[in-house]
Image (tube, rainbow, N blue to C red):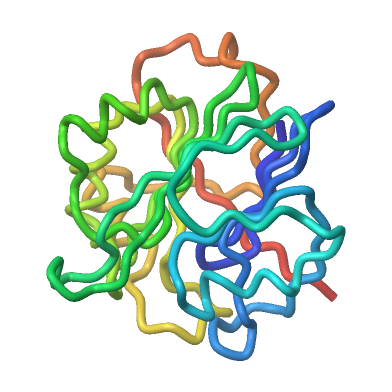
Length: 217
């Protein structure tokens, strides 16, 4: 499996023999970064916002999933679960987090979730190998809340998203604030994250993997 980050909450997740997934494609005019030039079989949209729902930028006639339910596409099993995505739980737009089961690995994309899941939500999500977690506040989790959610999910790997970078036009907290909350003083960033299967995770401890956003020419 390879996971590439294109900025904000947008990733491309590909696994040999399975359909590729693009999460939360954005309008670059709003989000910053570079215009997306991606192709996939599946697109997941966490909430109705131009920095999360710009699915028309993804080529290949993908199936666009934008709400809760269970889906099976090109060998990938996807479960969407509703959460509330704004600080005010009574009137905020809904967020959908997605659990993507690729057979040997399970990836959770939390979308623009803004609060800790309930214990029943955690149980419904099941075992998560890789969690893509918002950390930069701005109508989503701040660093402290992100750390709390990570401790509840206990994934093998956490890849932060939804935070400030030199390319972002959004008012978000930087990665360094989250790393400080997690007690990490230094972290090397990668171009992409690659893993073969769940057997690669030999330790119970959760590891943080930071990716450089891939800027498309």
